[in-house]
Length: 402
Image 1 (cartoon, rainbow, N blue to C red):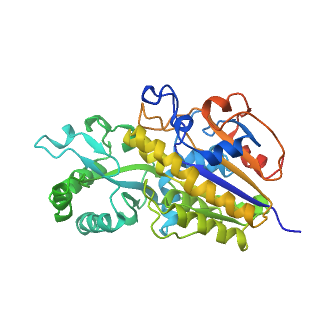
Image 2 (image 1 turned 120 degrees about the vertical axis):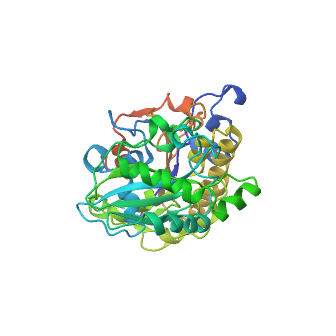
Image 3 (image 1 turned 180 degrees about the vertical axis):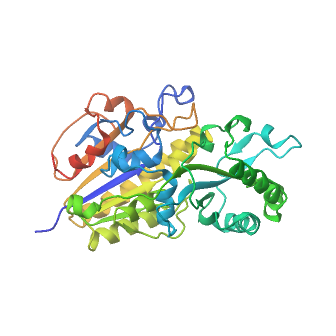
């Protein structure tokens, strides 16, 4: 007998609110999603609350929940998970921080009066950003502070014998003057200021501005945390798991959980990522020794942060037509017995351009199901379905453990 396979397709930040420009529909309602429309008629649909009470709505806590790890128990900070994914050798006394290279306004105003324009520096490439980070490293790296290259604008700072201090997420304060959001720690503040001086007139940024692109002109530190200790996904669930994602955070969760991590060329966490490559990586894993695959797509979240209604709709349509459609088509053609969970980790509403803690819609499909429903997969229809109050238990429903 063939072994059943299990798949999660995670559209990061996909959930939203009704938007006037979309005739009062959410992007998920408005988007052209023929595969999800078809699957919804034979699927369980409902709402799930992924963010525990009192915790910040982040992709870190939310994706831990979806993978079955209670964030209240397992969460030790976002950056340490990302550090795991890029092979950073963390000691128990180290503190990891995310080092975004962001776009600040580049006028003559004092540093504290600058405005944060873009948390992703126009989705800058890893190749360009690694050169910029190297310029920062040459001047600011020491035995106490060490920089590591990540993906695109997302990098890592390891603080030897550091402190887990409260720091502001850059995507929470887009368009705001930065003074009240800067670190209280004097050395971190100094490094941010100095990084701006180093990067503002870097040849790469001069060239980016000539092309009308946002300059990547300042390091922004956030997400401090200590070395994580996740239990093995395989030991918990009896399934060998594979992560397919462009984002270091998700790769780090996978490494910490003892899962495999697919390397997909051209996968960049943006709207124009290699969707087809992700599908092929997932299918290769499922045809081989893996029973569980988690396909993470960052694009809806990034478009939510950018405040682009049109691009968020497009990201959802790409997820449906370039990931879920080809994936389920191939599995059906090969006669695979499988269950599929589609959901966001958290909402990233266009209105606020950052994460919220609201419950998110999920779709749970079993290719042997014979249901006949009238609903579609979206926030409104999900209200008529099931409700899962504790997010980290949804994987038990997918894996038929409850």
